[in-house]
Amino acid sequence: MASPPENAGKGLKPTISIYTEYLSNRISSYFPAASYSNFLSRISNFYRGSSGTSKRRRRKTSLPLPFPSSAESAMVVCEASRTIGVLEDIMECIFLNMHYIQKNLEYWQSKAQGSNAKRAYFMICERGPYAFFNGTTQLLSDCVGEGSGMQHTYCLASSYISERINFLSSLRYHLATFLAQIYMKVDKVSEELVKDPEKSLSSLLVDMNDLFLKLEASIGHFHAVRQQSSSVDESYSFPLIFEKLPEVNQEGSQWTDCETRDAINLIYQNVDRLNAYLAAIVTIHRKPRRVTRYWIPYTCGIVGISICSLWLLRHSSLVGSSDIDNWIREAKESTASFWNDHVEQPLISIRDDLFYTFRKRQKGAMEPEEVQLTADSLHRMLQAFTEQTKGEKAPPNATDQEMLEIVMMRYEKELMHPIQNLFSGELSRALLIQVQKLKLDIEEAMLELDQILRANEINFAILAALPAFFLSLIVIMLVRAWLKQDKKAEGRGRVARIQRRLLIVEVERKIMQLESCKEQGQEKDAQCMLGLALYYLDRLYCAVEGHARATGEWISLRQDIIDLAKPDLQTAHKLRITSRMERVYDCLLPLPKTQ
Image (cartoon, rainbow, N blue to C red; front, side, top):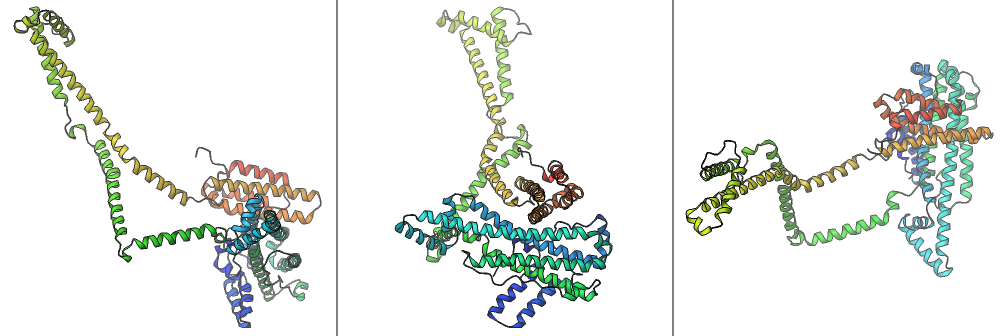
């Protein structure tokens, strides 16, 4: 069964409505009964609304239709609201499918830009086990037989990728042209539609039906060409055939309410058929699923997990072994030890050093009071020795250094007769004074060392907590990177801003290509370029709305995007708008490199 486009998951109702007819055809192939088709049709009508489009509501933010500014007050008119709902749903259908096509096209284009080795690796290793064994067998047989196996693989890969690029590019071309035709038609009749919806509604529905028929002719012809020559193994389940308005409705100038409702329901049937057809046709040419692309790493992972599971089973209590229980107990003890040594105790030490004074701490090896007692004792000893030696009272302002010089001079003199002066002189007193001075120096050094150690206690605690800090920092960074996945343009990081600015670049490129096609008279290509510009503007519109509303820039930015979508606005004026958008609006500015 064809998988829906990825953005189609934004609404449950359109998803069911889109694939109703496709599911009906697949089920009918197994159970050919008309009741299944009727049942699925009733489901589609239930989710779409049984009374036409009066109960239908927009399901997502998308580029507004080109109605005049006074049209907002006219939205409450019944006929206008029904018509606008039809047009919005058609635009949403095309935008979603174009986005689905664009994502697959970008993938194949990236593969085409790779080297021959990468393309060959894709052909053999990224298309599933069946392609791996077939490709390996073919490569070996070519190398043994003709000797040009790799060259044949390169050619096969180039053909495989080119076919999908050409297919998706052509399909995008027709859808973009269809989108531009609808947008130009709405822009042409917007004022009349708002002023007199009853009169212009019938002609607009007829024009919409004609555009659907033109799209059927262009895609149907492409479908026929594809069936003649293609390397794709799968085939389409059903052709694209739209419903046509009855001739009597197309000729009438004024329709009844019943006829209008039937025409709107017919348009919705065509929208559903287009969605189902595109889902089926693009699925055949889409990029391989992630499981298919990475089946080799996944297989190795599964094998590794299986081996680890068997190894754990051998050491588990299920087979009578207590190894796992012992490992768990040791892990708990190691974790508790790590927590106590590197988290709890360092934090307690830091808390104590920050909130307690030195006086409340444990007594150190040396206190300032003890040092002061030793210093006072030395001062008195020096003073007494000086007074006794000189025979006069020492000056009150004499320093210890001055008195110590007197002691040293007396000490040198006494050393000339050490044995005699040791018993009858002042040699012993001088030696004791020097011992007291040495004691004072040692105590002062110990006091300074104790102060240094106390001052660095918080540093030692922080060093002990560093392993836990770095571990917490790594965990926070990983969680932040996981939460801040801004790969899409709606994100808030640098990558999201770059993608939003690249959308503006794509809009500028399509505007310039549109002007070039107009100058060369290529009307069909000009419509395609307009449709692609509208597609990128829709993506930009959805990406910036939330950010612009938060910064208060949404009203101005929204009007600039709407002006860029106007078909009749001059190219020079559009380029000035894009230049202003890149310079003014906060959500489109690049982040500074320092952040």
